[in-house]
Picture 1 (cartoon, rainbow, N blue to C red):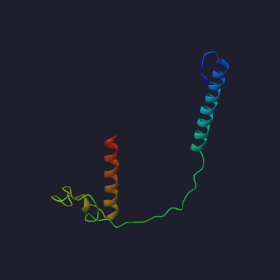
Picture 2 (picture 1 turned 120 degrees about the horizontal axis):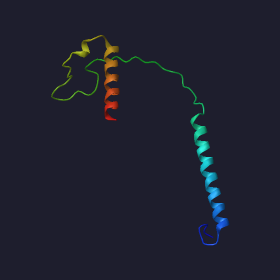
Picture 3 (picture 1 turned 180 degrees about the vertical axis):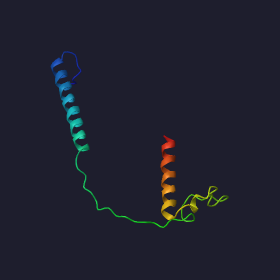
Picture 4 (picture 1 turned 90 degrees about the horizontal axis):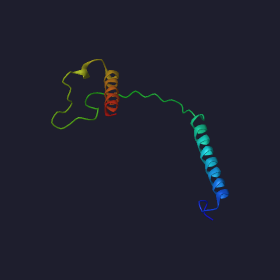
Length: 95
């Protein structure tokens, strides 16, 4: 019988209690999984050689557009840092 049928108040209370228990159990399991330890992989460090010609994003009419000549400041690490900062700030701006 359907739990919401007239005259079945006992079945209705059993149904509600069962659903409450299922919801509480799923919430507790989900929150416990959030704090479970995650296996750590060994960190691998790679240094990529980056130059203005190697970095993607160049367009056809204005290839390697750099009006402030930021690519000439510092070395390859500085250029990679500028690139990462540009990506980070553009993602924040999209929020």
